[in-house]
Image 1 (cartoon, rainbow, N blue to C red):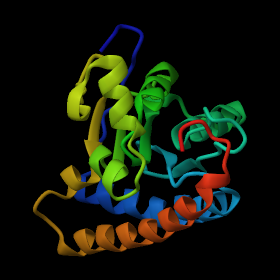
Image 2: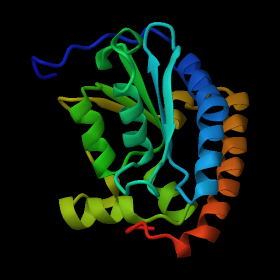
Image 3: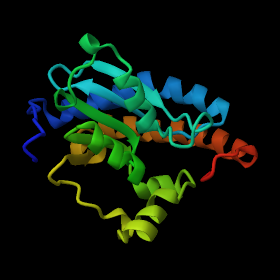
Image 4: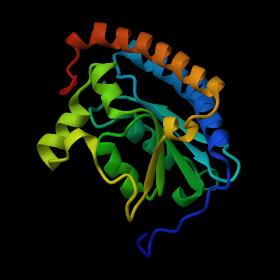
Length: 204
């Protein structure tokens, strides 16, 4: 890590992290995203949790109908930095959770904000194929010459992990929860896809 990046170790088990992340997605992010999709926003959302006790600090969702730069992660970061100082733990004391693997904009935002980690549920291939939003992989390929989303998932700034990696070959209960969330996000995606043609968002 760079000298300016202080980190705090996470002592929770992978199973505990996966369980808590799925709880936050289902109970904190999805309600925000459901309202956002009804406004014409995309299905992407995020949350920030304390490393120490996995308490939720803030959750957010995509707000591209307000500003095309307000992706789910950026909207979450904006809400986080709007918190009063005493209610805002330092980035190195937090875990960053994204419903979908962050695009190049959001990878950079998480880095500039000082987080040393992020975790996500759906990968780039899911975003392209299941959610019919191919821009993440296309931008990485066209602009950065990174094929198949193969960026360095562990580097001098942060480490990224998917919830699937956290679950591994373990709990069938957690795998079933992922499947249920996948079905729920399929429904939200259908609503978004049906409404996006009338949108003035540049990359729909």
